[in-house]
Image (tube, rainbow, N blue to C red):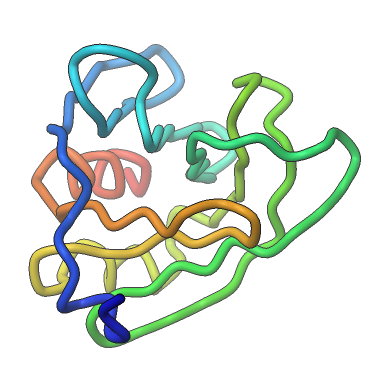
Length: 135
């Protein structure tokens, strides 16, 4: 195994952007099957929801660790009520960690205990969600 996450390959897949009434939605993953990562803007509340594919017992809490080239931060995470089969964490749309993710060199990492690390490319679709949610 490669110790430094930045030296590992990003997960295979692509980003897809979808406009939504409450804010945009970006999905990362392969074209067949569920998205590995769903990033949703809730503009009225000024929040961004990061939801990664994975199971976690309902009612339990964990930490979602987000790493970018120049920053790392941990957020409370739980089984998603809106997306069954996903583990979610909420960030304020103005959270500086989102800027670090947008500007990360090539990719960022999402880690939750009990799941495989998810390394995704920092493409424009993700940046668009962050930008739109801050308007």
